Length: 192
Length: 88
Image (tube, rainbow over all chains, first blue to last red; front, side, top):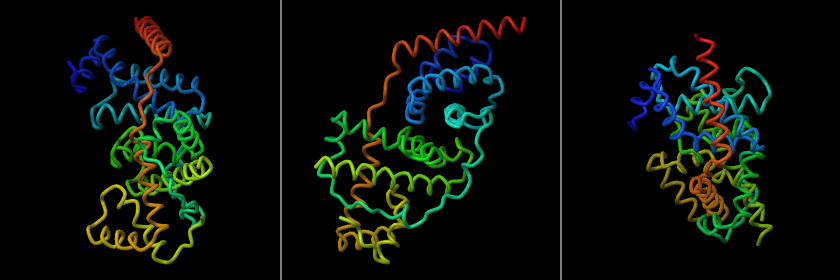
């Protein structure tokens, strides 16, 4: 049994091995999402546990309107955002328009990095800078960027997970990419 | 070096999101590429934006540490046992 629908159906009917298979299949993806969203590894572990406890308790209510992975990402993202904001209800501000003022939207650092992504990824220092740059993003931009560009969800799936519009995802994604580019450009300029 | 933005550069910025995701219309792509051929600054910006996306998309996925996995399994087992007891 490796199809999500079959596993979910079996787990909904009390098959604990099917539930364990779902955990095994998605554990690393949820952990990665949480590690990128949270600064603290302990917080990421808390999000991982809270996500799967919530899945365990609410799986019987899952109707299959969205895919299981979209539903799971929604739970994990909400758990991350709630933990970041230290509140009990999910934040509602994600659908607020993003201000794209010139200062934030237009590039400032124009530096040829002088390195390919393949070479850059071999450096632990570059990877640490990449993580720091994601940490520095405002959380509403971070959630969109992590889901779309790190977890590889489509724009539509990202919109579904965050319950925001597709244009809103695109705007936030572009803003996040611009901020990351500025951050990494400054780093590569210093490193030259 | 700081970028001196022209009107064309600003116009390119607004079209970039769809261009970077391969969703821009053909005539927009052609206009962007024509501008990039003439504007060194915008070419660097677009190149480093593409590199930024590639970097994060290709970064290795972090494995779940064994102790983190073990604690998750233990917690889920406890929750399962506890919920069964409550439902009895």
